[in-house]
Length: 636
Image 1 (cartoon, rainbow, N blue to C red):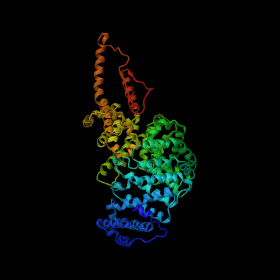
Image 2: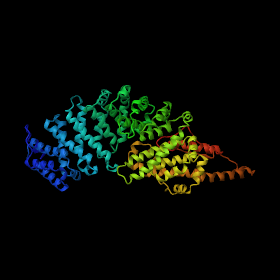
Image 3: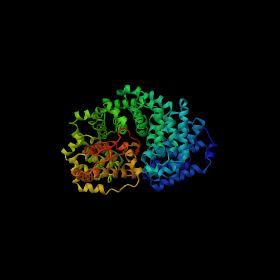
Image 4: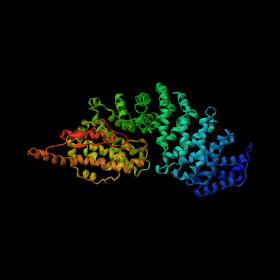
């Protein structure tokens, strides 16, 4: 059929067939009254009519265009119930053929552009409205369709100076948006390598000189992006950051390895005009920042890079810009709020890199995060609280003693509220469980950061928060439960809190009932997973996984040792020392230089420091090397 069409090209358009015209009239007359059976029968007729006779190309295109245009203008509700109909495969094939024609002949005529437009709109709108995007995977993930779009991106990138008609670019943007929508809504296990064919063409665009040129030429006060700017600065980054298939970490590293200095040069120019930024500029910068968020594995190797530190300086300047801060609203949906929130997320990853955290403290970033803790957006406040707790220096803590009670009580209050909302979300489809889970994790990370200060532990006792914290622990699961348990473990080094925990038999029993781990490797990888934004956006990691269960068990063992076992050990040790003091037999005296050797990973470094100090204070000799530690969970 396609061969017949290609061999019957005509310059003059012809009207659609009578059958197609009649069916289109029916659809326009009663779109809301068409049931699934009747609409499906109409689409069957349209497919047969388009495929049954040797139509001239212009007649075929007009017939298809009339059908698609009618569905676009009326969009019958029943269409969503038959989203797997072959008619959409036929539309997809026409888009594919037009894209292939563009790459080979470098042109489409006006009629072909119009058909491409209407076909792209239909598939885009159907994807946006269908309740389950998995229903359309069989026709939207066709390899030849994906290849045609990927080849088209490469073609545009190579022929940038003579780019195709702006209406063609608009349809390319629309099609990429279609795939972004699917990637954001498709359950993680279904992704696999479905959209991998578009990954490298997208990277080619994001690492091209055209990206930098378009960004550099973007004016702060502009009210509208060009189609080229939309493609390079908005849609391509969006596809990359919504991609959930394999090789994403390598792809991000590939981009930043080449683009980090260019990002800095872009911000060097545009940060000077930050007070004048309009929405288009903020959208472009937001997408740049979102790309950085997914590069957490890249940070470790490049944190001391001068360009990377310049990037941090620019991001801190952005967070400190009053023009943006004053426009933050409670819904966090305006561009200023989204920009601030994305920047905070970058720092929420950086604080787990020791060198980056030290640099943030040198930059006095705690003052910036403290100012953001008072804005009307709850999401931004939660992020700011967590960052504040990690970046406060000892002097900051001393000068902020009046703020700590409020910081602690607000965090606990927000955590209780989030847990309640999470419970309600099981019966309310309008509540996004993944977002609530991420908010909960952010709040327990904040508590974990606060636990480092003795003032906070005293405040917990003063506000009688230990029972509330245990209640929160009982209602959490996955990574949130693990991090809150680490917080409790740290608190248990306070004698009074330790005593209260030991007097809670229900809490102690819940710790003992956690299954013992079998896989040491999964146990070691747990903490790195909890700090990865790329993992946090995947609800299957947030809710439950084998590695997280290992992490919970490890933290539970730490709490049980501190609350239950250590007092018993201490008593045995004291009895032993007392007996030793009453004997003259030299053989019972210590013959070894050290009582204990402690091994640890970078992830456990802080808690091990505290354990080492405690045991040393109680007379034990510890072999413990602070000067050496390994990254990536390796044991020392």
